[in-house]
Image (tube, rainbow, N blue to C red; front, side, top):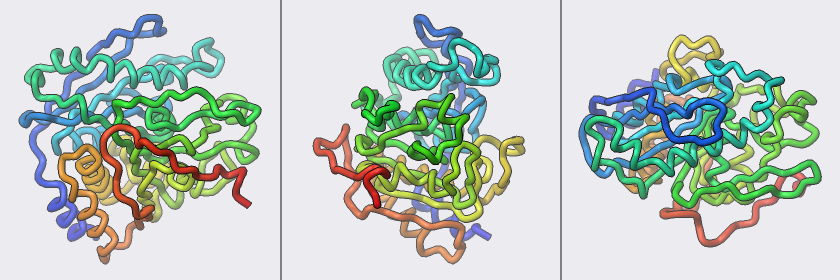
Length: 337
């Protein structure tokens, strides 16, 4: 159904090359309950390669999300994936003493990766001298989106509604949030309110250029809101410039975690193929590989006869460089009548 669309999108992002992937690579993480291990995937050829740090969803690990991460690497990006503490490989359940701080440790994992880019570059055979650490994006799926958005500027509201500390990272130029939960409040189910303090984000401080990807059939068990909950980062932040909504997509967005994965309730290789290419086009423009790539892919997607989704845009020029110098006030949901 989407062969013509995929062919047109391939023209916007260019051909792929073979990928080299190394795992597990252990990084320095003093005080962490278990060692911090990452997977590094990179194109076998090319220089001045931008970096994408990718945060997995709840329970996953560095071996997941190959449909996305390997594809990005084949198109010229160095992709780094940590295994966070909530991974099922670690076995830290809700009753474990470390669990209440896992959301903070997740953010720290991404920061540690950025702090050790030189170490990573040296540890991967054939990668030394080929990485451009000045061009970095942060991306994540589900809980991983919550993790990545902290580096993009989003903050957490405390029980009194006060905005928490700034955990953004000026080294991050852009982001992609896949199926990332929205703002909290009374819509959150009691379990989420009790166990997930990070589900009370404030998006007004998220000023880094960001693409939000959501499914129009993604109904969370954590909130009474509908699928629009997963579009809040776009609706309420000044930095999220574009929203890609996929028709019929649930939380797995067709299978971005992996093919034949049990959590994928809406398996669609075609949908995954579109997500691969659209996200790559965004990264190419946001990280200054090809400024025209996202514009071309967005127009191609919108004009296609294969109606598998739609794109909303705030219609302003994509900011480049580090965080924007000015902040645009966007009301949070409590301010909307």
